[in-house]
Length: 117
Image (cartoon, rainbow, N blue to C red):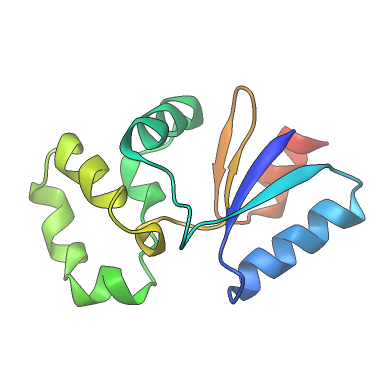
């Protein structure tokens, strides 16, 4: 079973869940705003993803812009970035999909096909 961290008002999340349903893939939805991943989980997910940590940030979100993170992330350590991500689920790129041995950030249909079909 995969876990999909989503925000219910996010159109990309809705599109992603529809794609999962259309492809008969079982999943469990977790509200990223109210039940966001903690720092240890984020570290595990990042390690499984093989992605740069920056890909875990929701760069188009209001908190990201309000905090001016586009100018600050480059000077922050990974530890500081993980700690920050763990404070607010709205900072985390969504949907965040977690399987037994992989993590996907955002909805990129080709990546999803490769990992999930």
